[in-house]
Length: 166
Image 1: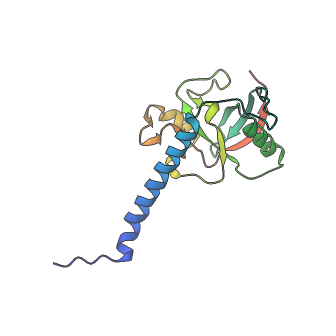
Image 2 (image 1 turned 30 degrees about the vertical axis):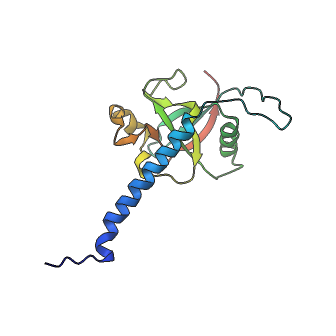
Image 3 (image 1 turned 90 degrees about the horizontal axis):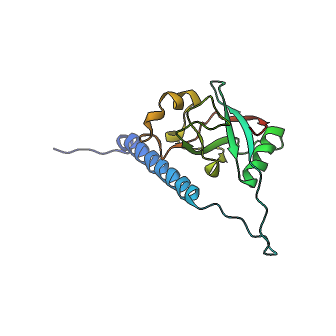
């Protein structure tokens, strides 16, 4: 018996394999960067930069549900403010690792982003995409096949406004 393997017959399994490999690599990369300890940065003169006050932003997704994101990194805070003001449209979506418990600044939901892991993106892997209500409904499954590593990247996420600290 001769089994003929054509490029077309390999296309779907190969695409699936490449997608999975890319997904795992992206999750691993986020896990690596998020696992780094938060340290004060050194300026050229050697002086330590002052701690940045956290900033809070309301985001929404295609469900129009709102979700508050706490940012603690100066670079991310500045980028978020640029997004809200319209100064930039680059990397408009939110990605980070979720923590499975309510935060005081986001009491409506049973989870929140770990502020140390929040970043912004243009494009991300499908394995971390979901809506806020879907994550809430399936929170017990997060961290396994659903949102591996608890990385959440809603593709339709959009920052709406900066909100006062609680």
